[in-house]
Length: 248
Length: 324
Image 1 (cartoon, each protein chain N blue to C red):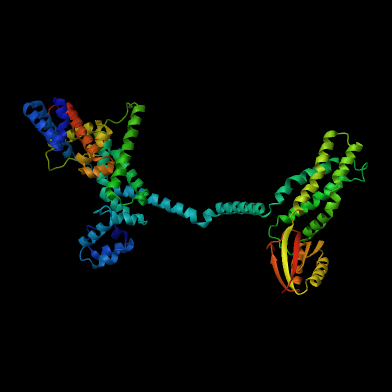
Image 2: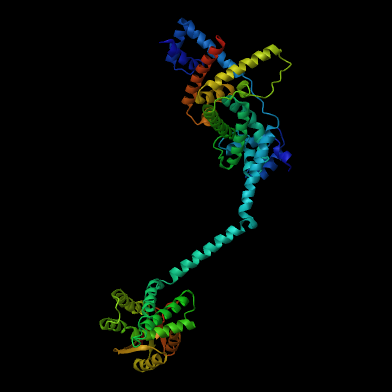
């Protein structure tokens, strides 16, 4: 089996034989059970029955990685990089820092993949690593800022230090696009001004749309704490935006 | 309730996360407070702004960049694995480790296998030094005592003994030349070494040595040798042999003669009403031969025969019983 085949997403690749072959590779004891199943959905139910974190469609690639297939990790990177990057970007406010953090987080996840015990979904475990790396980076940046005063020849601050090119789209009028971009920058400034613990909850809930349960698992804090932090974060963000825009 | 308190509850109110009582309180307040109504509106707008914030796209080739680092990591992991198990890389450390291990094991075997040698190691040095020290001062004047050669002679066999004791698994029934020599010297030892303290003491009185410190050393060093020898020769291994014969007194006579032929010493015979008991001290190398010969007399039972006979002198007790 080529690595191209191995990378084929099981959800996209709706081929039962391919699925069974993959099961054989990863040494799945349920191969014969699956052989009698009529559909992928049925097979998936069998898988769910065995896993402690049901519905984790990353798990087969995780198992492949744990067995030493490095290329299977590419699928996991492809799936989760955007969400991780956005979490890191909204928390650090810097695109470069976010890219670094995501790379570090993936590398760290790869190193400790053997210790992943499937007690939670792989994505939850991965985002927890990303959030922890991001928090560390934020602390480092803060510490550095305290010790170094900004130099005169520093490049002018862009949107949270973001230096990627902004490509205007043709679909929306340019003036609206500029306005929207301006508003986004202000919102990001306000998000960056929040306390670390308020910011992470707000980013995970209001920007990334995680459920309370997922946030509780990622941050490992109780439900009540998630909510109280979120409500305080929303109030603080509203106050910050009102200071900038006046009336919203 | 103040607007400030109400404002704190507004996010929870919007999420419908308040208790019914709190919810009624907030709703009542909102009907009469335009400022708080405005705050609710602003909160809703804030939520909208945040939700509408554009996501960023990963830079081009981001997956490839990450995977390059992951592959490097995997390669590194493999190379660590190879380093540990590939023979060429590990050869020198393994050899070093093996050498240390062998040295440690050899030292342990030496220590455990030869407990009586521990007592011998320290004293010979004192004996040897003492002998050497006064040798140049009084060899002509006191040739009749010859304390130096005597001390030296004691030291030499012990050194030889130490050498062959160092071979822990020397076959006991085939003693080496050095071992035989050591045994023969030791057998002569008691008669020669016992008078040594007396001689030393006498010489002290006659005032051969002017230096009192040296005299004292001499006095202490000389009796050390017999004490050390005593440690080795004391407590010879005891074994018992029971022989069942028809005529115990005739057999006892023959066994006594046999013991004499085997070079046994201190042969004692004790006659009881239906058995004869013979005790003797016999050399280890003659023991097996003796037991073989005893079997010719009748049925024998042996007890206390060690598998590894190290002692040169073995105390043997032969009970000759009348076979009913």
